[in-house]
Length: 381
Image 1 (cartoon, rainbow, N blue to C red):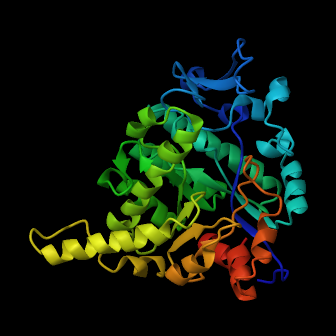
Image 2 (image 1 turned 120 degrees about the horizontal axis):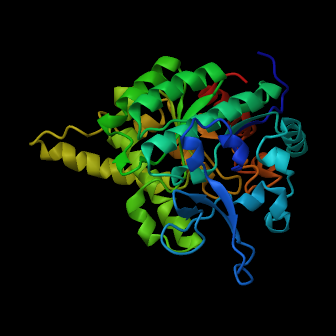
């Protein structure tokens, strides 16, 4: 397929939470939908005066157990425009209610095609499997409809409600029909590892559909919530540690062995952590192998680095990553993806340019990161 020489394929952008995403929730679950609320006594909250009211709780919580930074109603509700984090992106682009505005933002940032993911808030929105599944599937239908505006440039990943196996299987079938480019989960399925047999039926369906599985940064493991009492600790502890659990599940827990046709990607987690995680897991793998009896049944069948270089393991990098050459040396240059994180506050308008200006990368490596590797993961745009 012919593409322009400097084609940029964004592997991980986002849409922000909006009530529009829950308009087709089935009754009676519609009564339990997230609702925007604003705190009146908010002068000392630094602008963080809005949240979603779900199942009797506020989310995101800006302080106390379960705190995390995440999309609040001010980011997509014009009524709260005074506290919208001053993002340089219109609301219709943030929540994709006006796809033409997102296309203009892509043009401004020099991005030709973008795969959009849900807010990380979906990892904690509800611990009730029934409501969670309904919210996930409503999001998927919303995205499928919105991206029809320009399916060559606007791509999306569909949420898989792993805590409800039947709904998870039906969600995969539906997202495939709606045009999703990938399925997305967070680092755990609640308090279960992603490699728990409880989740296998969903992966069976995903493999049958021919869609890759993206594991996205998010606060999915409830036991960590009590340790996350500020947005800073929530981001570093509650949102970060589940990704290590996901990495274990994919390689140590046997998912790559069990599903030889599935591709896996780790998103919005950087890539420098591999320099520690890979040799450490390999050390433990060799120790378990030497012990011999009882025979370990959850051990990787090959060296850990072989999974990274298998052509089925992918990871997004940061444009300003100072150890990117070392990461390429570890896992090869065919598995690292470019991501803008648009329209989150940490996005940078020049994210692709940072890759292009990196003097430690060859021109061939730059093209792979910005385009060719992303195509290897998602397929042709």
